[in-house]
Structures are given as C-alpha cells and as structure tokens.
Length: 213
Image (tube, rainbow, N blue to C red; front, side, top):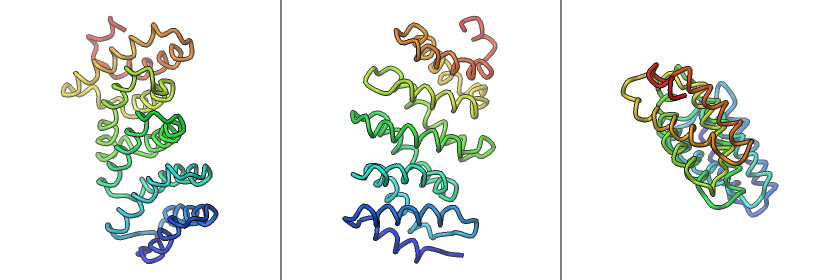
C-alpha cells in the first residue's frame, strides 16, 4: 500500500518549532517504515531521506537519537540512490569537527553496515563506497578513531570477502597498511580495537600478505 500521503503529513511536522511534535513525527515515520506493507513513491522517499538526515543535526538530542534509529528501517526500504545518499552523509559527518555529530554518525554508520546484506549487490556497493573514507579517517588524529576502527572492523567482518577480488588488491593493501600503523599507537584501546580489525582482515587478504601480518 502506498503510504506517501500519510508520510507527507508527518514530514511537515518535522519542521515544527516544538521538539515534542518533531519527536512524535519521527516516531511515526519510523513506525511506518517498519511495516511490511509500507511503500512510498520515489519522490516521497527522497523527501523522507532528506528529512531524516537533517534530523541527525536536530537541536533536540532525543530527536537526533530517534533519527539515527530511523535510518535502519529507511535503509531497508530505500532505493539504492537514497542508501548511497545516507552512506555519503554519514561518512561526511564522521569527518566533521563537532564531537556530537561524530558520535551520531558513528552510531548511524554502524547501524547501516549491520543492516546492509553481504548477499546484496547494493550492500556490497555501499560498503565498498565507505571503505576509502574510513581508511582516510584513520590517518587523522582529530577524528574519533576508535569509532572509525569499529565501523571498519564491522565492514571487514561482514563484507571482507569482496577484498579477495584481485580488483580490490590496492584497497586491501591500503587497509592493511593503515591498520598495521595503528598497532604502534600510544593508546592501548586503539591498539586493541585495531588487533580485532586485523583479525577480520586476515581472513580475506591474499596469501602473499600473510607474512606482513
């Protein structure tokens, strides 16, 4: 059943000055998205995606947190182009200066990676899209490296098999190099998380790389 009309009304409420109304609207949107019978036109889907992503930066923390949770059913329902927009937006937020947005983006990115299916071409394409950004963020000291390592580790655990493709040798080597460098980090927590990520990588890297690890 096309629920576009109902959702359109909820989207208007997300712009309301009252945070309670925004919260209830996001709650209802998440509830609708979670229904098996729910469907929407591509036009409305674009609006929903834009509204949920905007709400990640809502001035009310409860609305922010609810928007993060809404990403999961949205990714489940959305077309590839909208999932790509979500992934790109989260990757961009991970590199921002604001700590609160890094935290929101980290939770969102982890949730999206867990929701995407390794058996899906869309899932593999989205994770492949994320990996170069995650690797580049590992090189920066101003980002939440623990969270980035965790997201990368989850990607490797669930989607690492695609790195066995000869065409992904360069990306695999880059990931390997950045993780090995982090083993020398001064923070024990980062070294510990890095070791776990390397464990997820080892399963998939070419045999010629084992000696280096």
